[in-house]
Length: 431
Ligand code: LRH
Ligand code: MN
Image 1 (cartoon, rainbow, N blue to C red):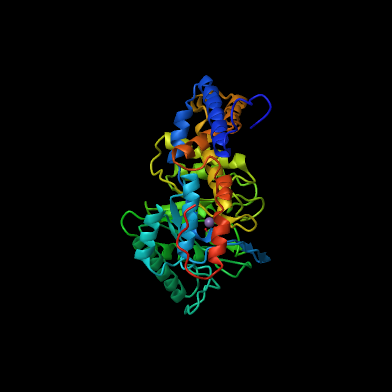
Image 2 (cartoon, helix red, strand yellow):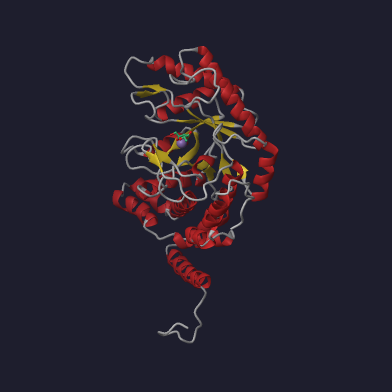
C-alpha cells in the first residue's frame, strides 16, 4: 500500500502503473499538439504503418578483427534466428520481415522455412549476395574482386552466384536483391578505375536481366573497407550511375554508415529521391567509419533529417517512392535482441518526429527566406518528446510500451540460453 498522498488507491501493478503513466503522457502530448493544430492520432496511425526489416546476420553477437564476445543463447540455426526476429516484431509491432544474407543464411529447406516464417508472422525482405568472401570449394577466388575482376571467369562465377541468390529469394517470396560489392583496390595502379566500373556495370546488366517480374535490384555504395584505396561503387554518384544505366527496377540503397565523416546524408537521400532512385536503407549509426552502431545512438538529429526527407516524399506521393527499410548493424557489446528493439524504437521515434513538422509553416518560411524560423520549425518537431506517440502506436498494435523492459521482464534470453546451450533443436519460443 503506497503511503504519501494516495493511500486510498491500491498500488497499481508495474504494468498497470506504466500504462496509466503512458495514458497521462499521451493525453498531455495530444492536448499540446492540438494547441499547435496537430492531431496526435494522425502520427500514431503513421507510426503504426512503419515497418523495418531485421538482418539475419545481426541476431548473433558481432565482432571486429580484434575480437568477438559471444553472449548467452545465441541463435545457432536460421530457425532460431527467425524465432528471435519474431520477438523483435512481437514487442515493437514493426519488424515483420527478415533480410537474409546468402550463403551466410542459406536455407536448407525452403518450404519448411517459409512455413515457420508464416507461423511466426514474418516475411522476407531483400536478399543479400556475398562476393566479398570465398566459400569452401569455390573454384575461383574473389581476392581481387568479383564483378570487376580482370578474369572473365571470376566475373561469370559472381553473376552465377547472384542468379542463385535471386532464386533463393524468389522461393522465399522476397522481391528484391541488394548488391554490395567489396570490389576495389588498396594501391594506386592496382586496378583500372574506369574499366573496373565498366565491368561491374556489365555484370549487373546480367543480374538485372535475371530479375523476376516485380523484383528490384538495389546497389549499395561504400567509400572504403575492405578496399583501402579505391572502391568501385564508392559513393552515391557511382551507385546512381549504375541504377540509372541499368533501368527502372534498379535503385540505390543507402547504408547510413557508408559515408565519409561529415557527409550530409539527408542531402544524398534528397538527391536520390529527386531522381526516383531511392530503393532503400540499411539503418545504423556511426561516429567514424562503418561502425554499424545502434541507429540514432550517435547522430539522432541526422536520422531525424533523413526521415524528414522521407516524410516529405511520402506527403508528395513522389514517383517511385517505395523504400525498403532495413537495419544493418553489428551488435558487439549489447544483447542483439535488445539492440534491435532499441533500434526499431529509435526509427519509430525519428519517423514520428518527422511527422510532427509543420510542413505548411516550413514551406512558407523557406519561400519567404525566414532562415531562423524555417530552421526552428524543424527543431520544434525534433525537440518534441514524441515517445508517447510511438508507445501508443505499439500499444494499439498489441506490442510493448517499452520493448526493452518488456523483453527483460520476459526472461526470454535466459530461457533460450538454457535451451540453446544443450545443442538439441529448440522450437521457437514464445515470449
Ligand atoms: C557492407 C554491408 C553490406 C552487407 C554487409 C553485412 O559493409 O553494409 O550491406 O552485405 O555489410
Ligand atoms: Mn549495409
